[in-house]
Image: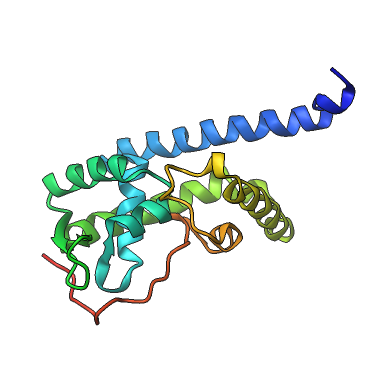
Length: 195
């Protein structure tokens, strides 16, 4: 094996830091959300994604793509939130094969009760450690990595959770839900959120 086939010292350090942050940051966020809000990070992101949608409604496939999770995993999370009356599922009026997930008033209230503490934690864990002038640079570099992942067919998430535009996927990011990769344009007119 030649040196070209190995990571050099700087590459190894960068790779190890990336691996650690992808494991430790979500774990820290999850622990705080479970303690304070009684939900997993995935569930909180799901509520956040719905809150950012027109009328608080997205299809299951839209949510899966935005959150980079499989439909099966998303369905389990939706079920948990349905049991707490924070979301409900409905047939999409424009596509009988699609299922909409609707944010209820109770779900929105729960999200709003905990979002400030969540954002404060993100600032403390991430943004205070990076000078504001360098945040855009880091975001651009991470966007490049996400772009290469999106172009690799072997790295795609079961074929339904990556879009055809991985760089755009990385460019619009929300602290609640992560990358925004699916249009927020409402289909078939606005529908009010549910109770």
